[in-house]
Image 1 (cartoon, rainbow, N blue to C red):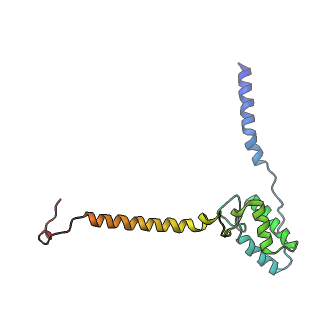
Image 2 (image 1 turned 30 degrees about the vertical axis):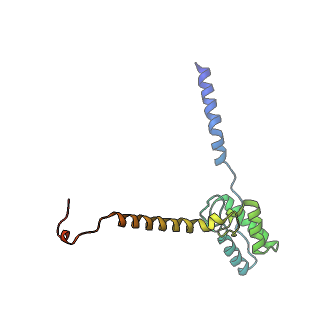
Length: 153
């Protein structure tokens, strides 16, 4: 009887081990970012506001508290210290994470749906609404002059 119980306990421990390992990950470098001057800090803030956190998805790199966002901010600052332009920094991150990292991706054949899809859906909805209204207006019988005071329940 003890042997199956031990096997069950061992199985449960192994099942929960990956979850425990996730909580035991070391925290990244907590030292604050060092800027050469206020112009570099302003450029950094503007650049990180235009980039998306790949984990949070709806937060900018500047706003996210995720560990990957901290690492990406350090990478952006390191690239800036290497003398890279904003376009080169963005291209580096696009090469690494894909165009999703940009809040305003470039208009190309594989992003047409992203750029024009909402407008097409809106126009399609307006056309459908107009069609339904016209169809219902044509289907209702015209009122006759004698029926003004009477309603049929």
